[in-house]
Amino acid sequence: MPRRNVTVLNKGHYPIKIQGIVFPSYEEMSLLVETTSSLFYELRVDKNLRVGKVNNQDWIEKHKPKKLYKINMVYDLYSQHSGQAYVCAINKLASPIIKHLPKKDSNFTERPQPGLNLRFFSSFRINQQGKHPVGPYDVFMSHGIGDKDYWIGEKIADYNYALVPGHAWKERMRLTGYKGEIFEVGYTKLDPLFQGEYIRNKREKPYVVWAPTHGYVYKHKGRSSYPACINLIKEIPDIYETKLALHPTSKLNKKSKQDVTMQELIDADVVIADAGSTLYEAWALGKPVIFPDWLCKDDVLKHFNPNNFEHQIYSDGIGYHAKNMKHLIQLIEIAINCGMREKEKEFIEDIFPEKLRGVAGEQAATALKEIYNKTILK
Image (cartoon, rainbow, N blue to C red; front, side):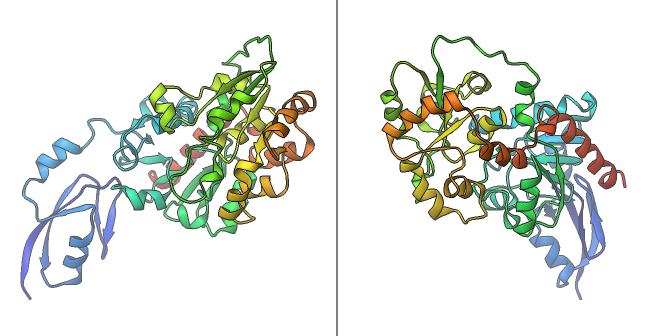
């Protein structure tokens, strides 16, 4: 059988093992291989390996990070998004974690690197759109707290570890087949709000914030109240102060350079939401939420199955549910006077328990250090 010396460079962020041979990240190896063997075939088909290239040292010099960190907070911009919407989301989620890690050990990175990587997109989405597949030392944390069937087992199956806000998420992931290790740490994005970093502004009128999730291009567009909310919010009487807090990815939001701020959640007396993270964030902060059922309910129920949390919210009537705009306006005053009721309090407690509110960053940092110690340092 013909044999030849072949150079192999692992350009991935984790060691790759093929037929008992381990290829460390960013290292070149030389092998004597039979060119008709299954080993040679497996080497050539692995997209993370540069096989038979002569300029590997130049590639290493160009691509290997000058400084490596133990724990990376990964933007995944090259494989996911070029805009700033998800950069802001990841910053808000990861900053409270980095705060509880040694400065020399953790940083934000554009793409996953050798070490432990906290990544904010499902492996399904990464495999579908990205160039950097999930490795054995990568940890999943969703870029939002909304369900949207984003956390289900088949979509995060490539991850060995996951950080979740509370017990309801752990149960949902297990029921959908996720086999990895799950850590209940809370929802890190809201730490600054619970820790008093934002002071509620005094307002002369009750403050109503309409915060839709992003619009949908294809079927089931009604899962968001955008763009209908743009005109509907104008019908709310001026005895209330109103604010349209659009999702960062919406076209109008990009054009006007608005940003959904944490301040709006703190200031709100009532939040109008539909099927995204904002509804959970509002409830965690004790804010009553109104749902525009005539815009969203049918599509939410059609798109999701009964185990989905957004499906449960609409099917079980958790929160205040409006049948039309006139009813929504009536519910604003009721929500202001009555606040959150027991049903939504119990629901959000299971989603994001009170004991983890304000300490999620510390809990997540502890979990990441534990994972690092039993994987990278094993």
